[in-house]
Image (cartoon, rainbow, N blue to C red; front, side, top):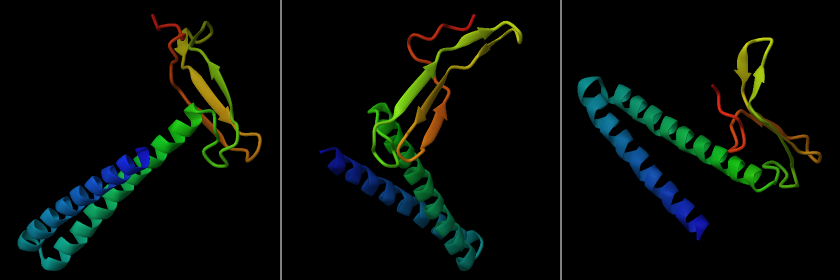
Length: 122
């Protein structure tokens, strides 16, 4: 079922990107030139696809990391979280960090996100 929903979402995105591209083609052809309108429409379509597909790839990577699997080789991955902490030398809060390291394929990813147990900044 999730694959069906993902496919439906992708189809809706493709229709939306095509609609925007068609609108750009019509207005660009009318106010600039047919060539400029076509190039602008192609640019809008490609940039929309790249934006959506990169977001989907990041979501897939996030789901695999949350499941404890490596996004690259799907092997078990080790996660290490460091809570937000006060740095007395700087007089500022240090950002929380989470690192994921895969011993199989050497995948490494870091993100700065606060878990529910991280202390609040004052």
